[in-house]
Amino acid sequence: MVSRVDVTPAAADLMRSLRGQHGPLMFHQSGGCCDGSSPMCYLEGEFRTGQSDVLLESLTIDGVDEPITFWMSASQFELWKHTHLTVDVVPGRGSGFSLEAPEGVRFLIRSRLLSEAEIGELGGT
Amino acid sequence: MTIYSPPGSDGAIVNYETRYDHWIGGEYVPPARGQYFENPSPVTGQNFTEIARGTADDVEKALDAAHGAADSWGRTSVAERANILNKIADRMEENLEKLAVAEAWENGKPVRETLAADIPLAIDHFRYFAGAIRAQEGSLGELDDDTVAYHFHEPLGVVGQIIPWNFPILMATWKLAPALAAGNAVVLKPAEQTPASIHYLMSLVGDLLPPGVLNIVNGFGVEAGKPLASSSRVAKVAFTGETTTGRLIMQYASENLIPVTLELGGKSPNIFFDDVSAADDDFYDKSLEGFSMFALNQGEVCTCPSRALIQQSHYADFLGAGVKRVENMKQGNPLDTDTMVGAQASNDQLEKILSYLDIGRQEGAKVLTGGARAELPGDLAGGYYVQPTVFEGSNSMRIFQEEIFGPVVSVTPFADYADAIKIANDTLYGLGAGVWTRDMNQAYRAGRAIKAGRVWTNCYHLYPAHAAFGGYKQSGIGRENHRMMLDHYQQTKNLLVSYSPKAMGFF
Image 1 (cartoon, chains in turn orange, brown):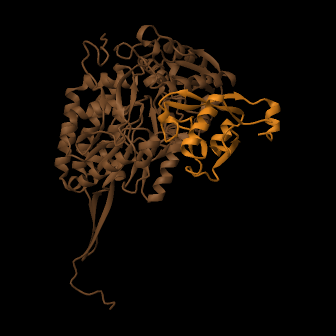
Image 2 (cartoon, helix red, strand yellow):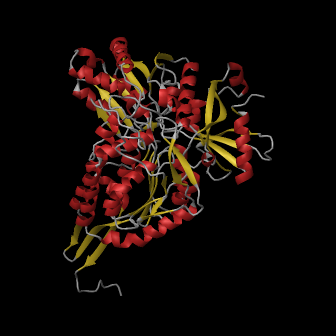
Image 3 (cartoon, chains in turn orange, cyan):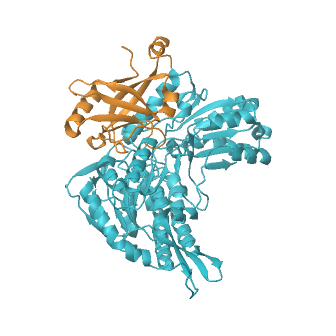
């Protein structure tokens, strides 16, 4: 099954922990300066998505009952859609209002190019 | 050459406290929950102080103090407020070197920049708004012989400000100076990566402001920033950061029907027309420095000229000379006045930059110099250093479209004027841009055609007060650095006065 977004085991661990502490989660990928280009993790519904956003993936995480949605603004997606994203986690201070920052860690996106076959399966985008 | 001793070591000219609480109501107040977090220096990766971990309770306490102070502060004369801002500037000037070292240690930026730019600009900014508020006038409109519309400026009341980590003192000043000048009380949250240097500043100037006029709550975005940004007790929120948090802050503001100003970054083009290379003179040398400006503050600038567009007809020669200039940059100890490139502000910032060096290569961009983490010896080995990097590629690549916020420039050629403008505007953002040419007609046309709030023309990275700064497109809302910023911190009061003794005749 081809996906646009995967998670590393460490990131999945952190998602399980944050889910347990706070409740259902969502991601919105940021752009711009400072902590831009980082995925922001919020309580599901905290960040209002709309017509200007694209749902890239509903992540299934072992031990988390509901899917964790991963969103991006549509304009940014146009520039990212040829790449596959992996949510990882690194030590850091973080910023923005992302839920993991107080844990001393920060979600981070690692990217690779999607193959022609993957792009085909994802609907030719 | 001077090498400053790290704060806290023998011979240091400035030292941090071992702990900072919240600054609320003119005194230091411990966090309600009693928790603190460590603050490392990116120079070495070692912790140097601990910081109160604020929560909603602390924000409420700060808002109480601010509301207690706002009315009387808003009624002080402009002369009194201007005097206080000038005194803040004077104290900063007297302690310029200490502030510069303190900020370099906390942020990782080279002290030559804090000595020559960050702190002098902050000092001037307070003086500028001291002058601007003295010179501000309301207006009156004589509507007819008996009726006059008077317009007064009134402060908003209590405002919330969320400060980024790339220029901890200067960015705080950009927001504080106009807000205080306009008569507002402030609750300010520093970035969790760089919370301490503003407290060092408060140790110098904290006594100058009446208690409660300026309150500082430290902490993480989700724990302290969110309660501030979503509070129904603030009349406005100012934020510098990125797009997702910017949208979230607008969302909270919409719930409270309050205005926001947002500065959310960019992907600024720096355009070098071929006449730049018409002579090997001072201007050519200045242009090469302009190309190298992407490394200022390690690229951690919202207006980092991170896309260099070089006209095809001088592409190879100009780029070759530019790369050579970059290779001559001295990277090392930020506290050495000879150092040009210091440390990235945090480990996660370092990791993010490395992830972009990776995807840049995968997309086929060519590394002309740099391209890796910089491994420095001794105490610096634990710090967060990235080699100044020049990529060559095309504008559709992600390294051309996303703010890496590192010392990384992505270079691409253009054919002619129209091609330059097309590439320059092919971005989601519109904060800064640079235009380099000896032809001032071309400079003017290009400057007007680029959809960005600030177009540096034959210069780059100047941030003087009295030149408006802010973004087009997804780069944000509002302008800073100019007296028009006072409008973002003031209400307009209209008194519509009739001097006629006669009834209108309706009833």
